[in-house]
Length: 103
Image (cartoon, rainbow, N blue to C red; front, side, top):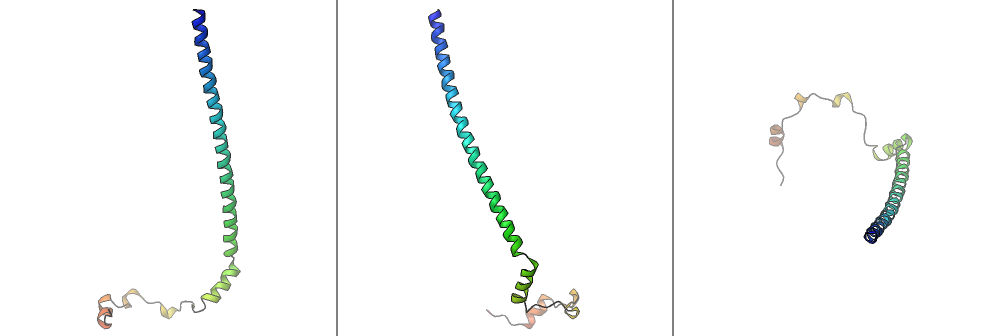
């Protein structure tokens, strides 16, 4: 009986050792994955920081004013005479009858 008990205990010890070995290397693999993910998150945060700095630089009021005068010089403030009520606008039917269709 003691020989059978010893065999069973040796088999249990071998199974436990094998399980512990697999768990150890699985944990090591998961720790490496966690480190890789943390590094990727850190790199993305740095990229976001750079993009926010670029956005702030590109949206400086002085730069926007220069771009406005350079590219939107044809725009002018809306004059009060340009504002009309909705009732004074021609209906779509009236506009279609006045202009010939071009196809």
